[in-house]
Structure formats: structure tokens, C-alpha cells
Image 1 (cartoon, rainbow, N blue to C red):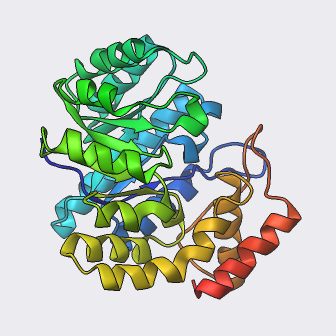
Image 2 (image 1 turned 180 degrees about the vertical axis):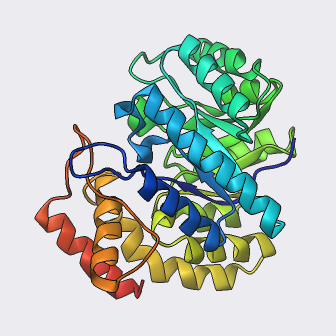
Length: 308
């Protein structure tokens, strides 16, 4: 099992005006990401509005991104990875989604903590035990703000002892917890990856020994974030710090009115004002709505301030 590292994009799902999925736009976004040097792509994550997608729509998106990445790698001699979203608060469905990701050729599956149910620590462990048996490397997604339940370090240590558990997308918001994961889990499992789930925490996490980021802002600026991450991987923290502080206003703006409404507005704004080719965002699907006028101003100002 290869260790996950680098800059991954949690891809948005572009929508047409009538709310249908813009598959051609999604394919353009995939090409844009690959051409900008991204290390990996995450379709069917939260940023992709997956809770509102049908399984047929999800299948079509996977059938676009996985062959495109495979062909890119073959032609360019690259090793871009696909991390397919496969989470559910129903363990049986999560197992089925991981099997789908494996059958379609994804490199990893991202499995979120069961949400709304708020299971016990033992329930969380058994959920990941079930998906680990599929045989595809699993990235645990810990995001208490969306699930209502933090995966504490002792529980993650138990999960990491299971076969096919490749790492964690850490979005607990606690740099202290992230460092404890590196201290206690990575020390036992050196190939266990610790990826930031917060763009703004990428630098501090990587300075502490993390492996990269699964990013939202890379939907618009994959090149800059990949440069930041690669600087960290090379140990050039000073260079990474310059990019980090340049992008700080955009890190804040990209979530100022929720996700993915904020990043979709940023993408639409850049496409309309700069003629930026290769990115498509379109509308959101209810219950996500367009960013408020006040948020749009914050996003526009941040783009100008950061020079992106």
C-alpha cells in the first residue's frame, strides 16, 4: 500500500442552471486539475454535494474521472491518485460504496465518520472494520463539525491496526489532536498518512509531520496549493510560509458562506472576469444555495488581495 501524500482536490460537482449535473464541465475540471499538477482527485466528497446526488449520477462522475486520470498517468508518466468518496451513516451502504470504488479502479476510498447517528467509539470502530474488509485502502474522514462525533486518538489507533487503513483526513480543527495522531499512530504505522482537511491548517500540520491536504481551494488554485505542499514535503517551510500567508484571505473567504457555495462563486467569478478556461462550477443544488451578496464581496476582495 503506497503512502498517500501531496495535494488532493475535493472536487465540486458543477451544475447546470436547471440543477442537473454538468458532466462536460466536470470533465473540464478534471483536465484543469491534471494540467495544473495536482497529486490526487477526490470525487464524491462533501464539496461535491454528494448527499444530493443520485447513485446513477455518482457512477457517471466516477466513470469520467477514473479513466481520465488513468489515461493522463499513462501518457504523462505521472502517478495521480483517485480517492473516491464512499461514506454513509449506514454501514452496509458504506461497504457497498467502497466496493464500487474498488471495482471502478479508484486508488483509495474516503469514508467519513457515520453522521447523525452519533455512534459510540465501539460503533465507529466496527463501521471502519466493516469497510476495511473490502480490500481497498481506506482514508478515515474525521470531521466532527459535520458528523457530530470526533474520532478520538485511542479509537483511531484501533482503526489504524485494521488491514487496509491507509490514513486519515483530519478536519477536527485541533492541531493538538493532529500532532497526537502523528505521535501515537504514525509511530506505530509509518505508512499511515495524516492529511489536513482544512486548507488553512495545511502548513502547521505539515510542519508537524503531516503528509498533505485534501483541499477545497484547489478547485480554483491547484497550482499554488500544490506548490505549498511540495515545499513542505521538501522541508522548505520558509517558501511554504510565503504562499500560506499570501493565501490566508482566500482560505477564509472560501468558506465564508459555507461549502461549496463559496468556492463555486469564486470559480464562477474568475471564469467570468478573467476568461479563465477549464473551470466550471454553475449553480448549487438545494439545500445549498448561492453565496449571499455580502459573501460574494468578501470572496471578490480576497481574490484581488491574494492576486489569484
